[in-house]
Length: 114
Length: 114
Image (cartoon, rainbow over all chains, first blue to last red; front, side, top):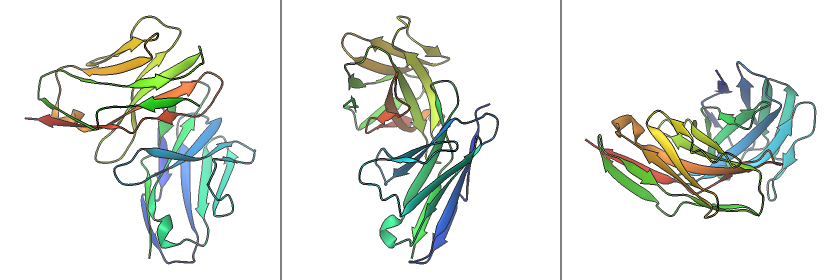
């Protein structure tokens, strides 16, 4: 149990375009979902926390207008990177949490902006 | 603010041997959770083990066990009978009882030598 999927696993987009990443909890209802960014050989950096039906809470320094997060249901959250630039290239990971303390992570999405 | 420190950037162990990864944390809270996550080369974060602060008994999951020293704010992970598949980055993480967020350490890269 506690499986989280993420789609796509790898995406390449051109500078100036937008890209959407989906995160789904497959076998449990996720009251809270999280979006992280991970640079090579570094730890995870929390970008934002979202609760179903509510606006996301962004961490300090994260541009909420660039990284749009929607948590429309208890099993789906999306991250849209708007007007992407090469510096947005990174590995994005989502996680989901139900009623217990544990966070379960998706497999990640590698974004390359050319 | 809570912090998590992993003082060993890299560790290595011989296959079938035992290795201990260190983690210390700083908090003023009495109610919290501690986790160890594994991130293999696939970059999928996998929950290895969880410890609730109110439990005195150290958590164990098969070959993985922790040494939780609450007064010393120490939370080490012991891997027994190391296997090649244990090679990965290991992240120690903290979650306050009243928070949804995880605070991660910088990680320890574990190499398992055949």
